[in-house]
Length: 189
Image (cartoon, rainbow, N blue to C red; front, side, top):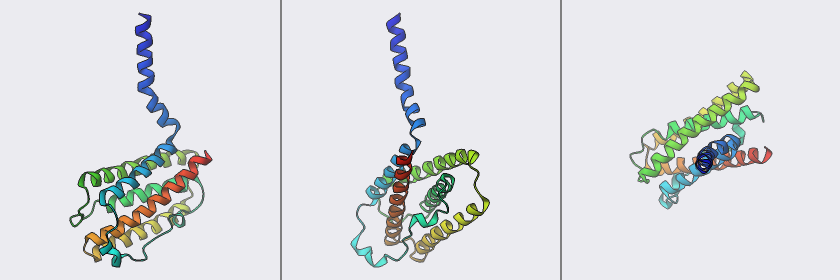
């Protein structure tokens, strides 16, 4: 009887430990998800095709320049909006790409899931640290303008493979910058 109870308690602890770990290490989990997104982005399309080099333009953006303020709420909302806009972008015309379809779908799902998670975290932090309305207004137009530039670029290039490769490269840079920011946040906590 006692052995059965101990075995059941052990099973409950083992089953619950991942949930406890997730609760305590949210920043670490978010960093892992961003890194997973980076790997999927790379794996789904491989190396940047040489024949697309002529398409590379000056689209690059320093992600940190899109964050207004150093408050956790500003950073979380900016990351949420970035992932949401990236998710929306990758739900447009992808007919010309020859990327691994399974990895592409996994990547799109992961972007969406991260956007939802960061929104939840941002709402939680906002409860204790309200966001200044001015900061909110400054943050969104710059991000939207950047993603609108990417969308316009894709449209102008008729969603060609090379145009998507340029956008994939842009998003890789953004995700690397997000990983860096999350890594810094994790070290601070």
